[in-house]
Length: 311
Image (cartoon, rainbow, N blue to C red; front, side, top):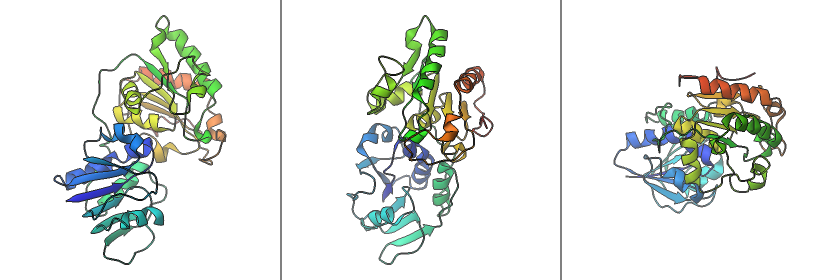
């Protein structure tokens, strides 16, 4: 049996789909599961044992696959993603959407759930079609022993999610003073195109492959970042974290559980704006430092994002 899954988005999107992918694997243990996703995510995809093969596919680009037995749309609900999957001529398609299509494909279309946590949204889709998923099964397998490093990642995909870099720098100064005499205890990371931003905090930020970044986060003592892919890596590996949310609510994209503190002032905004969202700007350096202290002192991994939210 051949199963084709579309999730051609970013790193955080991929990691929030892990429980759904594992649900598919459990339901069809002998199937070949192919994930259509961007090539740059290969290092992350290879860590998800539920996926047999990555099919490099950019967002809403044609999918180079023919006649899967089952296609699963974990990408969205719009006609573009549905049409891309129908073009592969699957025998059956599971998707969110607004209506049925004509043709040979047997379609199972569910109504879009609206405001629903990203992990639960895709688990719901499969469970409505008899495929059991465990939303709590989002952890990736450990890659090494925990180190003493504190990772600060100031970047984000849009300006709206980017806490001011001068505030990250102030947090870094405080933590660096506490980490003395070990200057390597604090690491600032930079993704593609984020080097100049990170260098406003330290002269030599760490940049490298996605695998290297994931390993660093997976073994860190603590991660401090915004609502970005690195936050989801920390969640996937159970790495303690302080996460700065705005303009999207952590009830939709935050960690379901784990040793995390989520700072959020309850102000939704434009996700694609160039400037930091007003709610994000309300988070102070003092709040972040207090949250850092709370996480490092926290022994239990049962803290939920809801209880750890600052309003």
